[in-house]
Image (tube, rainbow, N blue to C red; front, side, top):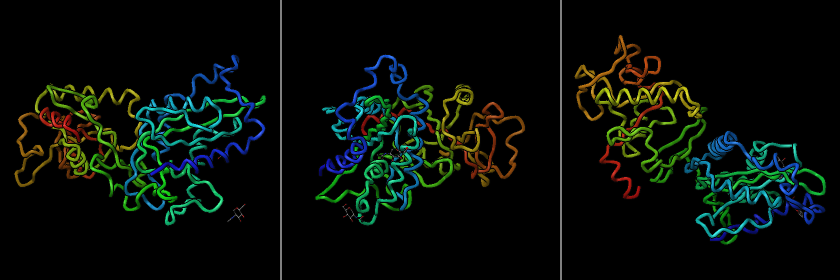
Length: 377
Ligand SMILES: *[C@@H]1O[C@H](CO)[C@@H](O)[C@H](O)[C@H]1NC(C)=O
Ligand SMILES: *[C@@H]1O[C@H](CO)[C@@H](O)[C@H](O)[C@H]1NC(C)=O
């Protein structure tokens, strides 16, 4: 397989042909001292998360629906490469890198300064999708759609972007660059490899994916990569690793998400664990760390359910709880709550809740499971 160097040159040609007189005279604006200040910052951290969120939102709603579309993550190394490339102020030849980033896909847009934003540029890349004929795997004649096919390339799981002001013969331009890894737009014998496979969303995730990431509006879903290894534990307590989900789901789906990741829904066997988790979750609420709006409550599932036949609560492993931290007046079986959550409004003490409620959840990876992470997966 080879990359569609030709088609990338084509889109470059489209960009450059809009500006023929300026090319040879292009100058990087950072050479101009009085404008340096505005360019040295590039993008702010908040913009990084907006760019990734926008990519993921668009990727989740391709038509026809994608079965294997991966959730994208921001990558700082890619952002630096994008910045390097943006600094050239035109996009002939990507900088050469011998690193593991040799398979990088690029999307660029050069616009007159001030007329557009990064978000509009990404939307315009996605808008090229109307020129892409999925059945033929081709752009409509005389159109460009390679920005679109890179944007929705299913296996491009990392993105980093940068923008830069450019001074060309006294006019201000702005260049927008996104670098994708692994890159897409591969061709076999002149035929574009399909950017993604169609089918029910998440139905063709690979085994290294931990589950299906649903956006808050629940249109489509994206395959989500396992967040291994150890440092992704949100809280370590006595060798056990607790991970707090960023997305919300019903009790039983939350339970299977934990299992797909080789863990279980969290168990709380003593006051120490309860106290530490309650503290950690209360910090989450007050900090702005939770940027994901995909949850309906501020409560978290743990692996405890009411078993009517036994008329008692049991941990998912079947164990009878020896420790309990139900909030005052709980469990009250209100709304036939058979599943147990840590309830924000009662200081993350326990409450019985309807199992179909969408909560975030806590997965537990016991020390013996963690040992297996190092062997691959
Ligand atoms: C650059 O992005 C803007 C959208 O903000 C779009 O209108 C314009 O057509 C794009 N330029 C090219 C060459 O694709
Ligand atoms: C594509 O461009 C070529 C050359 O400019 C032209 O002859 C042809 O009619 C165009 N095709 C369509 C479908 O517009």
